[in-house]
Length: 309
Image 1: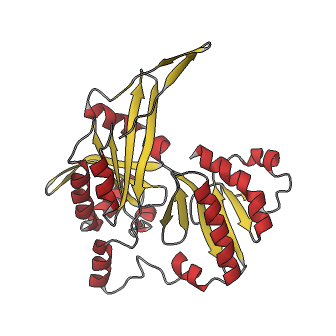
Image 2 (image 1 turned 90 degrees about the vertical axis):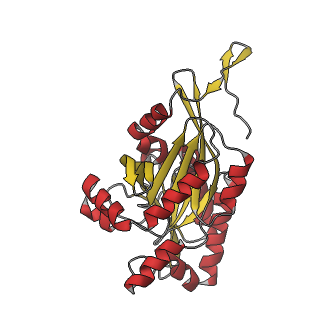
Image 3 (image 1 turned 180 degrees about the vertical axis):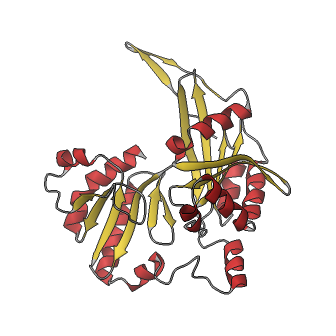
């Protein structure tokens, strides 16, 4: 695939800094393990997790409380996609093992709140070929291809090369839910898809306008439908959206410094700090959007969250 060029400015001259891969695959894995939340908003659980047919490089829980498998390759490798999918299927058939791991590493409350509707596979490598990119687009799974480059000894670049989002919950999840005779554990009666179906035409139109703006922010924007909200992401979430039919408005949660809001929007009556208030989705700033005027006022705040993601 294409490469990213990195240059050092020296007066009016530029000198290219050549990107390299890690010397050892273990070095790459260790770097991510120590900085996983900063790099990807994923809580590290365990590395080299032993399964019945191999070892998963890393297991984590992302900011949306979805299980994550991360596989690393120091350079490019033709087997990384198929290997990752193999482990993802294994995980979906061993939910109890993952639940116990989260309970052990974090706490029981978090383990009981795992969202199994959108498990993720994150593949990190120095590069991918066009066959990798094409292959994952044919698969109904949540898969991220993340390319990395090291520049000298002080710069690390991550490039979200492509991402696919499952159109529906995985077959493994549906099979397990059917076996226990109750899908409520996975799909509450009032999940966001039902809320969206029941929304008024006016609220649906407002949501579509919001979504159009979010996608226009960049080609790397992806939409992920979870149990209680919709997450719009780059490598990390930058906006989480909830429709509130009874109130006729939309809540958008974004990341940012509440103290900077005055510089963007002096009249902050539709914004509040929710850093210490429980809510569905990620983000420390809540924006209430009830009209197209509210949306226009919210756009600079949302754009800043996108730029930080």
